[in-house]
Structure formats: C-alpha cells, structure tokens
Image (cartoon, rainbow, N blue to C red; front, side, top):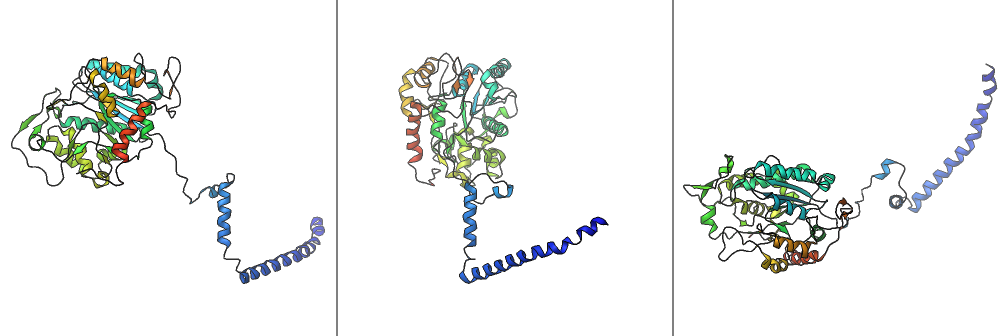
Length: 425
C-alpha cells in the first residue's frame, strides 16, 4: 500500500510530460503530409525505394532473410567447362585395347562406363573390373563404372542399340551433371587430349548433337530397311549372326528414315528423351529397328531427325576419322602408320578402326598425346610424382595443338552455320 501511495502521484506528471511532444510531432507530420501532396512529392516515392533497394543489394549482406530474395536475375555466367560422359565397349579379346583407350581418354571431370559383352570370357570381364578397382586415381575420383552384368551384343543387331541405351541409363543414374554422351569402342582411340576437347567444347552451345546422318538411303533401302531380320542375341546366351525372314516390309510412312554413323556425341537432354521416353517416338522407333539390319546406324539418326524439338540441333559429323576401302566393305580400313597424316589433317578428336598392331598407337601417344609408358595423358589436373599419380584441380586445363585443330573443325561444321539451321534432310 505504501508503494501504491508513493507512485500514484507520478502518473499525471508523466502524462503531462509526453502530451506536449506527442502533439507537436503529430502536427509536424500532418503539415509534411499536406505539403507533400500539394507539391507532388509522393509520386517519386516508389522510385526512391527502388533506388534504396538497388543500393541495398550492392551493399553488405543483409541481416534479414527476407531481403535476400530479389526479383533481379543473377548476372550471366561465363563459359564453363563441360563434363563428358563416355561409354567404351568391347567384346572377346578386347580387354587390353579397351583398357588402353580408357586410360587415354581419362580425365577426373568426366564420367565413364566400360563394358565387355557376354561373348567375352568371364576371366576377361573379371580382369577389367579388377583393374578399375585397383587403379588408385579411379578409386579416388569414383568416375569409372564397369557393367558387371554383361549384355549380349550382336554386331548389326538391335542388341547393340539396347546396350548403348543401357549405358546411357547408367550414366543418368550416376549423375545428371554432364553435357555430352560419347560412345566409343575398344577399336577407337583419341587424337587429342581431354584438355584439348574440354577446352574447345567449352565455347560450344550445349544443345548441339553430333550425329552423322542422311535421308538418302540408296542401296540401304532395299538391303537394310525392307528386309526383316531376327537378332538371336535377344533370346540366346550365345552370340550368333542375325538372319532374315520373309516377307519383306515396305518403307514406313509415319516417319522418315535416316542412316549414318553408329558413333556420335549426344546431349544429355536428347539422351534423357531417348531413355525416359516422355514422347512415344523413341519407343516406337526402338520396336521398328528391332528388325532392321545395322540398326545402330539408323536408330538415333531417325529419332533425332523426326523429333522437331531436336532436329534443329544436329551437326552432321561423328567426330571421327574413319577410312573406308574402295569399294567400301562391311568394316572400315584398319589404320596404320601411313594413315597418321590424314588422321591429323582431319582435325577429328577420335579415329577408328585400330587393330592389334600397337605401333600406330605408340606414334599417336608420342606425337599427339604426350603419353609415356602407359600413363595417363598429361593435363592440368595431373600432379604428383610420378606425373598424374595425384589429382590436382580438374578445372585447370592446359590445351595444346589438338585444341587448335578441333577449333578449326568446329568452325567448319558448327560456327559457319546460320542460327536455327536444320540438316535433317
């Protein structure tokens, strides 16, 4: 009670103390508001706030989370280094060739899937898996994957297409952070370093698909499109040649057929289109090419050129140097030392077909790749002693003469084309 009695007299005094300043500030605010309306000062207020907002975004990091959200788009990013997803496949007796090609292609930034088909002896497939598991660099990065459950693959049959799509699905499952899918065989070999390729591809639009193609079937219409074939690899565990059945079929009218090289560089977007198949075209054509002779040389060409959203992205080149005999045979000419000048002059990043004679590969290693004693190809990522025994910065590229050659090729097949050009004719 005593406390109440002592505090009670203060209340009127406090009310009187604040009454005058409150009345004065209210009067000033009213005068400022009326004056602002008469002088038109209210209209610029939004712009004043905008200027503050812009200043605030360029100033120190804000304290409040709400201010961090801005409708302004981020500045455009500069050219970034792409990531390539390789599929390298082989068959019986290809273990050493496949391993050499894999090491020549290796870069920590890329992804790799390797496969020896079911015709390969179990010992070879097991040895491939063991080599990958025991390679220190591969294990540190974890970007080399072996298909341990081997597929039956018949040359010229649809099982080769199925095998390629299988590798695509694995790469998509492992990561979606890659830009191009490139399929190679154990008979292929690079003509330039991965630093050369990555450097040059950094300047390319990421929607380009490198697919050699033509709609002029010629003799292939009668000898490949019309005959119906069966691939025993679809239902047998032993490899056998495809065989024909009767009667022949007519050329399709629902879609246009294209043919070309079985080797290509496809964008991740197009690979997803083929694998996930949100449109029915890839599945329809997969069933059609099940009975087609040499379906690997037509399936992807026909899919991409009949899909309007991708037809305009095609570059008519397979990124390979391939020499054919005259007249051409079923398989390309086996490359030798005499072919090296033409390989270099093609400016292509890859060449095929190489046989078991390693002399020409040794020449390519020494003159074009700077590779010694079966080691990895030197690049910006290579550190340690011996070289490339440790992994440095994968984004550190050291392009060499191969990058200049590849840039010349891209200038010829890509940069001289007009925007929106369509080669699917």
